[in-house]
Image (cartoon, rainbow, N blue to C red):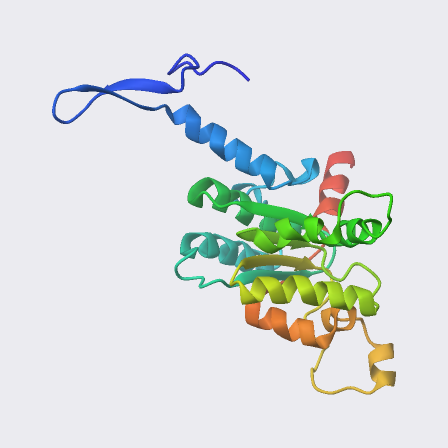
Amino acid sequence: MSTCPICDGVGLVRVMSRDGRWVSRACECQEIQREERRVIAAKIPERYRDYDLDGYDFFPGIDASLRRAHQTARHFVDAYPVDTAGKGLLFTGSIGVGKTHLAVGVLRRLIRDRGVKGLFCDYRELLKNIQNSYNPQVSVTELELLQPVFKAEVLVLDDLGAQKPNEWVWDTVSLILNTRYNDKQTTIITTNYPDMAPGGGAQTDVERAAREQTLGDRIGERMRSRIAEMCIAVEMKGKDFRQTVKRASFA
């Protein structure tokens, strides 16, 4: 890390107070370092480390839902924490529309502007780590793995529903979401699965088997209903950004 040109690495600067006395105050580099430490503590993967709300690009012909999603993300940051009242965001949409970009962008902006202590969790990786903790040769326990998830002021839960559903998965998701719901902690979720089936309403087993799977199919309808209480749903439609960029770069 380079030496701060303002304080020469001391961390303090001398300034004149209103009553004409020389006093010491923390250099602005100290807040920058604190922000960097909060970003590191949030465990945002290196691939997403530079994602920011200002860097969410719009291509010609982009679906209007993506512009609305970007606007909602910005408004959420501006409203946090007073007007959000513990609610989070649920970004739904197909692969590559920028759900994780916006979720990380919100988290980073809250870290920078609100001093939030946040955490990024890949859903599938979290479940895998919990399963590994059952191995007697592993020193970490399930509770030790989940404590940071429970306690994070803002949690990004990425790719919810990616793990093949079973009773254990549903129980684990229920534990995480209910704990954060009861503690009024903010949760930002991304998922490739639609919030509800087209048309909604009750469906037979045959109808459910014939249609595209929903978030309720992957995590259970009870937890999908819980998320509806916890989060503002943000539907994102459009083409895969990554494929668009790839074609543009190598055309």
